[in-house]
Length: 357
Image (cartoon, rainbow, N blue to C red; front, side):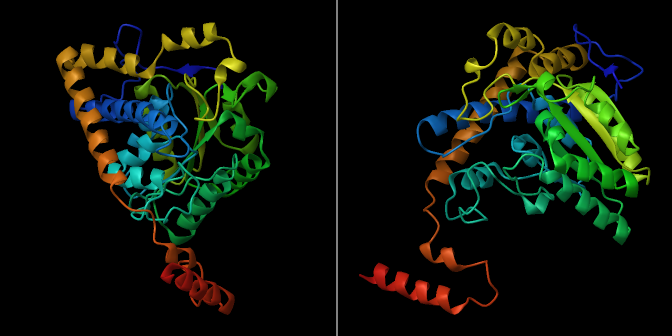
């Protein structure tokens, strides 16, 4: 429960007993997903500061825990996100332009601008909608997994949550039900050390978060959340167990939130920059790049080409999304009732008259 699973050593070599031995194409795909999330976060924070989107929750420092876990799933498996997992949605095939339309809430946003900013959803990729309250996604994930068991579906659910969510009643409800009924669910706790401004030490008296799983009758393990291969290996093994009918697993990915909690946060008010600097030495992109350099001859030329490719892709997606008009006003009355009640029909008529004038 206290041991930390780590695959990539400081020099980029790997532990041969733990290395999942990804083919080069998959290793580069994982790195590309991590890099895309990093570049996207930088650009979206800039857009928020410019007033071009309303809100954003970055994941700087947590890319390995997000993308590495998503890589371990099959296409039919489900992802229930926290609120900083665009890398997982994009890995599942969500078009970047569609993500941008949802962040902007324009006419091509599938939910027509009704969600809160930065609360995207991708139904085609079995990627559930993000919700703001801490931990409420955990019972949702377990419900999906329980439904799968009842139907005989061999798919698995991966649910992301933070260290702060382990302090909620929803965490207890979800873990207890999952343990009793052996729900095919993988609980990925992204322990980034901070629940906004509250450190982990102020949240729990447990030595680790992973050991909490034992009280609910299933396994919990800790991985180096800055190590993409370690997260992939742990999640893949947990997914295999769930798919084989052996129930849930909790994976605590020990990582660090290098940036702000959100675009509304100033972390300098509550944490020491010395601590942040120490964690930057274990930046997940640096760790994985050293592995690529040692195993697949990754070099500066390939790195620069990837950065340019991703930057250009985001630039095009932003430009395309910003050309789309806001949602039509009559969408205020759609998608809620099968038969619109009289009072809303009356309001819709009044809106038409106002627009006509």
